[in-house]
Length: 110
Length: 113
Image (cartoon, each protein chain N blue to C red):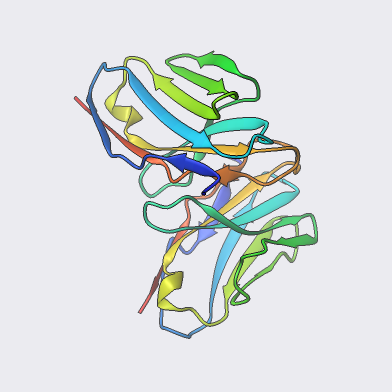
């Protein structure tokens, strides 16, 4: 079983839609949960991180972690065409290195 | 602007011909990472340097080597590229190992003919 599972998509939505991106992980030792955004032909960039169960908001983005079910979500409100990218979840524990999911490709059409 | 730079952006090599990919950073970060990312796959960590200390992932093939001559530069050497080594190679940095955020370069796309 892979440590982090993520549906690769693509997920196509119209502009203005609420987007839900999800990951599951298998190791309950993971303490830190991140979302990276990767535009085409670019490296990933950190979007948000959290380390506790519950929600964390940053503008139109909300990261949600449910440690009991080992489930990570990223919600995007009022999605824009500029949000079109691949979204990768990543996890780590302590000083471990990052473990990434495969990424979900999001396409927001005008 | 402080950044992570990778050269070249696109590299074509022949089967079995050694190739070197380059990464430089102006962030003065202590940790540098090399990831391999194949199409629609998760970035896979190959190895990382914490200052001069080299840390190899257990499943990184011996065909892959790395050098970090100074803080700013890190190289990925592929001694005998196979067709399965065609991928995007991403370099990343972080200030310290316990810092969550990694800063990625744009990647080098390697094609093996």
